[in-house]
Length: 311
Image 1 (cartoon, rainbow, N blue to C red):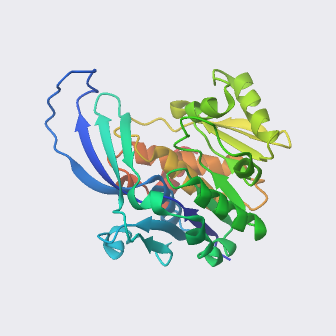
Image 2: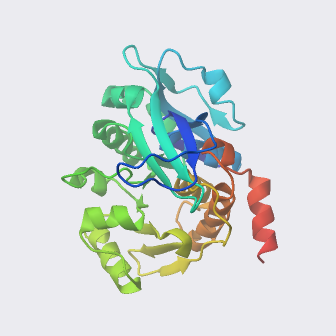
């Protein structure tokens, strides 16, 4: 039976401008480029990544009345049956500045309809979660909606993947959410905000993992940028999956691609974690080599071509 992934999360319209380099405070910087629009949002990015890698993918999200779902979510394998429409808010928006010098980005987000998602909205789509192998979510929607989704998943034996981004400025994450999480996937900055342990070497990553184990999480994946990603399971299995070296054009959606693509390869018992992460890393390498969020996310064939080239 084909794997089913459900993504509970955000949909944004990305407004992107590429600049030669990031300006310093108070500086005016000319750019030869104008602002372009593309589909994004951490939730939709992860959903598109899973769908393009061949998994049947349910997208539970909320958009504004002006949003054209048939046009903006027209992705093979991506089900839009669970897209809700806010009565009061417009579709979320992300304002993204990309440095041509480094490929790095700065992102500011307006929540819009994403912030209008309630626990009851999620419960109304319980069937989509219950039929899934994995539920993925992030923190661009309200915490009550995230927790409700994970409760439903736990009730139905569905594995949960939490991408704790963006991390709350204060207070960390609720203990209840961590207890409902099977796999957590912070980057090195996010895990520092949560654990207070700076990621400097493998020893510090082990200490970070221990923090999550103590709170009931079985599997920890910490992405470490161009160095790849570290993983550890509560059974002691650990390792580092290297990144595929490419010339970065735009790092937007790189982490989202990694998570969505990795989930499509994971076995239910997670016994192939390193192999699945290698697939996710290959997918992410394609994403950073192209501009934009959703437009840059690769198909399964493109990812397999990368893997074949690096055998």
